[in-house]
Figure 1: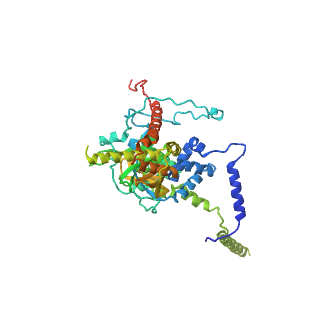
Figure 2: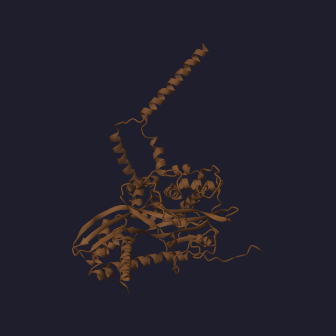
Figure 3: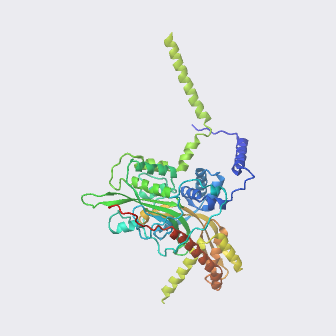
Length: 361
Length: 154
């Protein structure tokens, strides 16, 4: 039972005033600007945009500052803000094949056309703390080389050409939108991908790892991972044609997974897909593995009872705002409903004591 | 050249400049516009409005569309005293960027087109191309050159 209570207004105001002071920290230390957060805490900004489900680096930087670096709190702020925005429309699907790639690697094809382009990666660093960063911030310019002129082709396209991988035929079907109508199960793949794209990185990572450890193993290889900028195009009703309304950074992962085949169908690789706002390859790879695990039914595989195969389990729990909202609400005042439980426990104990005393006589 | 071709070319040019303005950094556009010193009379057909656009991807990069997440966009529409109508849909939440982009869209249909192209659009185009080239050049420098040390079959 929920009972409204009043009071504590001054305590709340004072708590928030102290929060503001603590957020600012030691006044002898210069205050962070939003531009500093946006430019130097970029991957935190990217995570807030991805899970906040709103691409706007300045807003994400503000949210991180306001949340004192608590990224789930920052994501909460972005989600709350986005509900206030009128929906101006939907874009055409972004053309990731046209991406201006900062990074593009394949773990399966060494000599992929377009090459293995490492980009600004943490890979192959020694994970040793760099104390030079604690001293000065002088960075020598990164080397340059003659850039590639043509778009970098998707690697799965080459496998597709030989019929070795399950195709992904284009369609113009209008995808469901879980921000507009409550999700119904079973959810189709577009809806699942939307939920995973905004899902909690840690949760999706844990599920993906569980498939690698054997809970519905699907033998994933990273066929391709690319990070870069794509244009966003939208049809403008006033004009009667499409224009680019902006450019966003995204990470895309395509996995190549164990093959399926039967007496009538030749063996074929299958695929999982991940697409995330910003530079976030851990999340993109994890999303692709979980996407693949959730496809067991359409690919004619067995339900092994693994968590990553359980659509309801995954989709109902991957959203960190829903999760933290329900989890954290139990710390809010529950005095009255707890009182009733207390009464009940006391009564049970009284009855038990009385029965024991009777038996002893 | 047929009439349809010239309409198509005009539309393509308009699309390209609207796309350019949508992606332009707000402060840079504001500075270039200020330097141009134009102050056309206009009425609002739609005052600048901040909203969200749902960005879509495709399953597997090529398959069925799905909703990836939203991005912020600001739109505005103006009509010049002469009658020309301009529209803007620009990335971000800067209302002045939307106003300037809509004005430029309208003015490009009239006598100031060459001046605006030289003073605003050409610099933006060059800067966008240079920024893109710089990133691509850095990416190219991180391309792996493989060489085989020892083959396994020996």
